[in-house]
Image 1 (cartoon, helix red, strand yellow):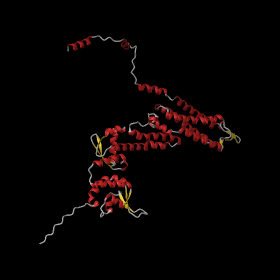
Image 2 (tube, rainbow, N blue to C red):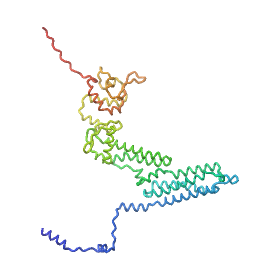
Image 3 (cartoon, rainbow, N blue to C red):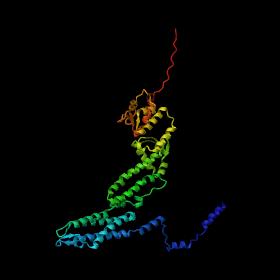
Image 4 (cartoon, helix red, strand yellow):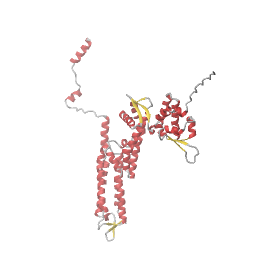
Length: 431
């Protein structure tokens, strides 16, 4: 104790000797700057280095070429076409080489800039280039009308007129190509790889399952720009793809549940790579729509029944078979499950149906059909057949599994003929 007190007293009374660096800082000779993170430094240098000078100047060059080219055609078409018929009509007999160079250079620059805008441009620079491309499109569409409008002193022959229509269509495609995709990317702050071409992360079944729809959307976006059908891609990406992804998530969540067994939903969310709130919301939605019957616990959920055939996958079938094997079922429950297995055949001869289920000879199959729910089974005699057949609806049988089992259990004595032991006859007494 004395040693500790002496050490604290010496520490208090001891004078601190500042270093030379600290004195320079106090005198203002050295300015201390906060340390930037490594990611911020890399991002700043990358954005400064990747400023789109090429796109900027090429879009301005394209804008100037469009204005000069179409303005010269409006002012004096003889610069491009041969004047005949007393200087009134213009034909396509000979054109100047530099005009052909302009016709090739303008759409080529537009297509190359579209590629760089989509795949190489940083998200922070998209708005600047988008404004320049919009000015190019507006200028092109406003100057193309006076070219087609033929006044009395500028009359084109049909060959020139057809050529101008071809130039208009080709340049319209080059300028407007991928315009829907560019507008969509303008609202996103991520690169094209993270927006449309994100690769699936190994180890996450959810990533492997629904990232394929995102990659497909990216390919459709590029190919739709070539075919000029980008609005169809937009409908797919905004509406159809989201429903496919939601369905894939629901299927993965349902497959992760177990019959009559508590499953921790936090573990399910971690395995699938989605949030716990989204997992619970999707399960609540399925239960509200009566697709499933689920009992929620403190940390998880217990699957009780699958009421929709599209969620009854092979995994669910195996889990349900394992669940049935653990239960102590009566003979009537076993025969009910055998009946549901027979519905997979969709059609069976009536005599074979009676033999497989071991139905009592005195019991009519028509009475059994009346007891079962509607659309589960029906008796028909197909054309060109001599025997009656029973037709099944497997989806309805899966949906109404519990109800069918209850019918077989309650009416098993009638259907399968319960053997009642005969009463012993009383011996006759003689008087």
